[in-house]
Length: 561
Image 1 (cartoon, rainbow, N blue to C red):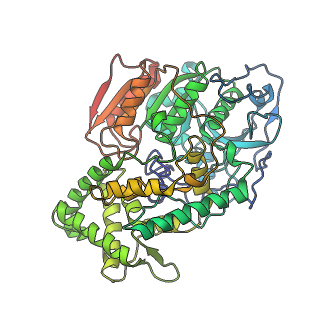
Image 2: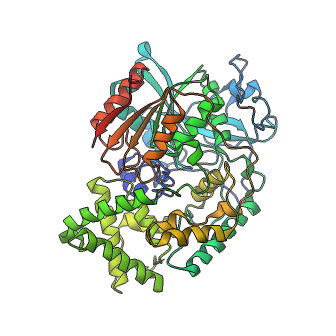
Image 3: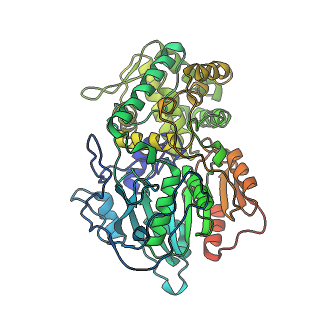
């Protein structure tokens, strides 16, 4: 649950990204991988985005007559056969990643030697000769061609996180072994530079709390219903095809278009679920699989945060202890209990009337349905930098709660803008469409309310967030059944014991479902997404050894923070 955390690796964009998609669910790999960075060029959707072959500054893909094998969906669940050979055999027109003069992300990719292309895929794999869309991909080619392993495909989570920008940073994380791979980033269907989806929402994501009482919950019900209706009104013909299974099918088309018999894969957070779905649908077409911050398929669905309240409470308490040690800088309290009491006071004040943050022309109104989400975003990373960022935000909220002028940092302002306006409606629209696309949601608002009331006393901060209703309650039911694990997969699963997004329990569950997998545990870290992101040399070394040799450890292994 990085969406909502999302994922951009450029140093200039990390702070903003950490604040943004950082949850948006928390299903995004790392706080650094949250939302499209400032300066990223995206295709601008219309009110009714068309699912057709889209144009860009890169040449369109064309068909060739090669004879790469046609993929089929091996599950046989409510699908037709694989798409025609023309998708697998298309010739990719590699070119510049820069789409406009102010596209700084594309410019940085060009400087790093990355090339970009568009892959044409069917909108509906059951009707492969019908409408098409494009999936944007990037490639940093192997330089050690003599020892080349193959291509490794990246997904940073979200759902709805981009990865087009990631190859240079993943190569850095992979150290010497990186030169042996073609590193492939891609923006999944309807994300980033791929064919876009925009429901015209007034907010950029929807992971809010129910607040302190029934009135806040009723507002969330009304908002969720309105957002779902906006998506149906603008994108009814597209929404049924925004699913993880279709993204997995796109991945296999990418594999074929690259000319690879098999692909390796690095997925974070939601990306671990996507990777698992790919292995179940295409069991003979993957090589080395790294799944970091895993989501077991049975844990994936519209209520992604349900069951994470304990981990989030513990992560918040650990942050509060840190903030108490830094009382001189932030003034939040000299003990952990005092810091948590400050949060309680801020929440109580915001429940009576919204807090005022910022000054004209940009003023934000923050109430008790918003504050738990900001806390949730901030505790997915236990590094000093991330903890300091959250402490700064809470100190601003505390000042506002006292009726004093409260000026947010640029990072916090960007987070407020993202959460409380439709400035990035396409990101929220795509994320929610993906989340609602796989598993049917419970419909009755009263069921959510009963769950909230049942958990509120024991978990007053995060309970009304993790149990809250969302747009999926008003979404049309998925057309395909959810993916279930039926094929063993020799993957390397990486997990931190204190992960407050995709819990350690979920990684253990996936490991149990895949007997040939190995579990690499990082003990003592309240951290979502570890490899190449957290700076733990033990984890990074063991993952890189696997990527270099293709051999999993003989048994599960443990690293320490």
